[in-house]
Image (cartoon, rainbow, N blue to C red):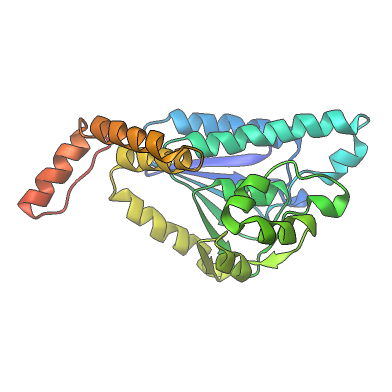
Length: 260
């Protein structure tokens, strides 16, 4: 299937999703929101795909919501309600799919663009990238991302960065814990490939269930989460990957996981 606002490439079990509105800094319009959601659903259901990478075309990763569309909208409240819902569906799909999603931040990530990056499981950013929650700067209450930022930074730091729309560098984002790794622009693809090479040798089912448990742990109480961990571990013990993993351990060899 062809898309107008993004590109999808699947190669060797890896799905590369490239936001492709460079003339608008890959900002979200309704079409990008709908197309990204459709693609994320498809890759989530495709058992041949083990990992997803999201990146941007041109100078930016994602500039957030398309401000020109906001300005042109006759009913601005209705438009923002619809646009934020479209973005939220993408965020939920990223967090709920049981496979790793990497954000390769090749440039600016503002507003919902920063939220999209933080929805991913790992964030690799180029050194020159600029980031901001941005919403306040245009007189808009944040439509996405406050929970992600607050859970990582804590209350006071979140107020500093969200309430003032503070723009920060990739290095600062890494120090704050929002970004996993910062690299030079020419090294971004290599850094992503390095992570991909690690996941290629890991059991995809166990990785997916571990991601689910991490997300559930953010809201569960301790007792219910321990029970969920017990049930999930017991379920995964019935997979062929687990049988291979323990056999390889006993036989002192490297396991070969097949995602079964």
